[in-house]
Length: 117
Image (tube, rainbow, N blue to C red; front, top):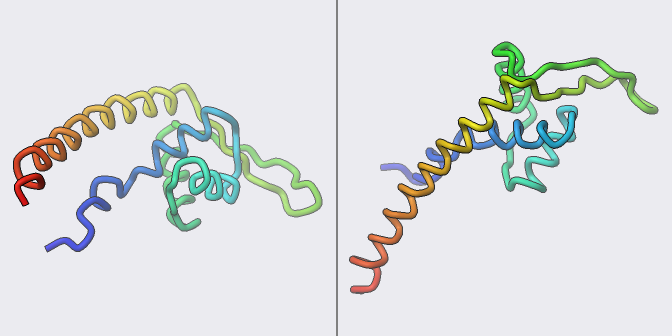
């Protein structure tokens, strides 16, 4: 039996969150990690974040550009492409459908079971 069922649903949730952050402004990895936590409530380790960025880059959804670091090493800045914007729209559309299904389950549970206890 699963201990944390809801984690299955949101396992890859940080991908659309990253695309959302990149649609608002180009960013580099560590900044994305911090903004994922602060603005989206997602916690992801840097390894998984960079794997996801690599997949998104390979698929043409994001592009990267090396820039000179201010007072430090060079940075790789990621930005969203038009293909990435379309993927984000697809994510949002599908998440809206999932929210409706989840809300229906919660409503029915509360209506038929939780109030009877």
